[in-house]
Image (tube, rainbow, N blue to C red; front, side, top):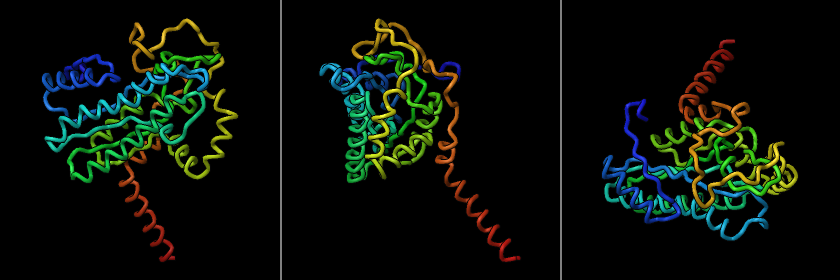
Length: 282
């Protein structure tokens, strides 16, 4: 941010604690002025079959991933509603629509965020509020969550391929903050997953029961002593990228197409018109 000419403000806070989020929001406005865009993105999880997850672990993952979004939305709306403007971006996932094995806390939280967002959007529309609410549904990303997430799997966890670089997600979130799209699906796998689950969810159940375990693990044995960030931060900042650089896509043609669909519609209409003219001339 400094390289781009801005000045960052770092406000560490546990998003599972509403009071901490409220303090961070107040300090942000004191330092930088009214909040125009609020992005809810925090998550914590554990990779394991449900019966191997302790209730306290499930609760903590839910507090961070789901209630963290609720708390952030509370803090943002407290400031945006009186001004009748602002944008809240909820960072979702294809897993907000399609649950997969070994990730019950994460999938449950993302489903909850989806339902929460739809309910709140109706309320804002009822009140004719100028505050805009959008949700970005992401594909598998090469982030450090697979190095930092708690895991009881025999091998190192991995995102289900195909995998995208986090910059793809960042571009989608920035675009959503600027445009009035209700929901933005990112990556062709996200679109296919959501459509497939709407048409044949039972088929998805059987496929994931067969393939979903191996697809979420590398061939590398798990390190049982590695630190995780479920209850407290890991001791170092690993940056934005994970360990899957070689197999991650830096761009998404689907994202470009969905964010330029008006232009594509005009081009398609022109091509159809040209084709019709050519046929008529024959």
